[in-house]
Length: 220
Image (tube, rainbow, N blue to C red; front, side):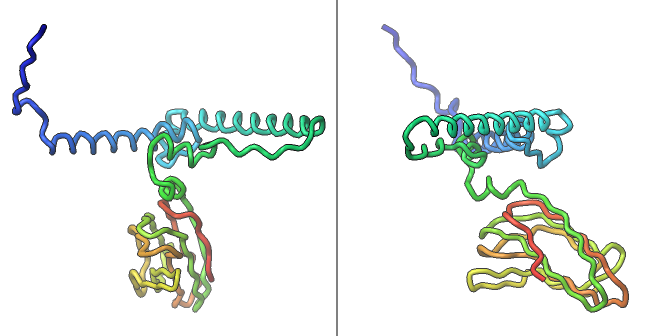
């Protein structure tokens, strides 16, 4: 029989220390997800480190093999259907998609997993007096980094959003050569930029975006 001595309260971790350890663990898991797991498993490389370490190529090979295996499975299934009575199509395996696998393995939200890795670059040439509008399709609270330049010229701009009967103006400017920042959606809908060329010469606007949005489109 052994007698155990109660631990000294001073030796136990505090609540603040436990919270700090949890936060560090979550951040570390997120870094590993973006820099290692996603490039090597799904060929998604938002940081570029996956390509530098050869992980993205590994993910591309895995994705290609998975697609070929699925095609073979479908061929075998179709061949079998000609020999047996028709049956109801089997339900897709739970978590078979990339999105479901990420959610299941890392516990992140569906909206974030779907949109967080999007990156785009758009160039639009505006004639004198002409305007153009580009919008990102975003969920409320989603964020997107952006940077646009008039490539040596200047334009007037209006950063705004609309959707579900709501509208908002985030920022306006006149005679701006460039602009950059983070666009956070105030509600579900379309959020983006309108530019107008008030100079006497054509102006090319180049927009670069990355973040949590599902689509980018030119509205006008």
